[in-house]
Length: 193
Image 1 (cartoon, rainbow, N blue to C red):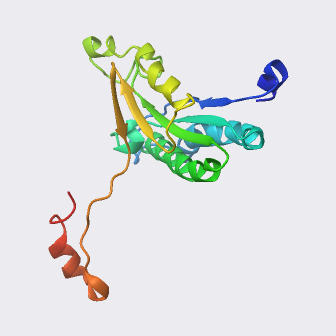
Image 2: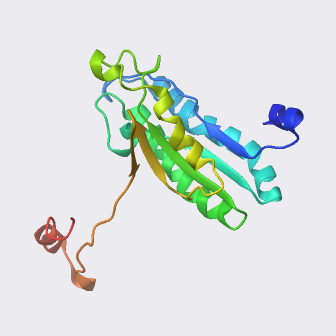
């Protein structure tokens, strides 16, 4: 951030995209590898955004894009560390979107799927891997950096497909103040579309 301010006088946009993988099942992953992945993905974004945050708030304008993943949004076998870190990024976005909103600082997430050195050894079939051009993620990132960017949105982008992703909440069931475990079990599945 200091280099950007020194070179350009300010900072308007922060894109956090640091990443590593240490894929192993939860039973086999070491705590050191788990912590390393969380530190790179979550704290890497925290450090950069924290350095830019006062500048963005003071100028009452800014766009922050954090990188999440379908592994965090939906899970992926052998990626408990990566998935946990990537969903934590969404939690960070959900709070920062509220804190920055009154100062026109919008915070969003991108959940890309692209052919990169980080994804080349994941066993993706070559035909599909070749369609996952990183250039097809760029339009979504540019939209999230634009004047008309939304606030608090996760866009999944890959192979030319773009969709809003993230958590959902169903209509639920109102069991009143007397609902017990059997009531929850009986209502489960009826109202969680």
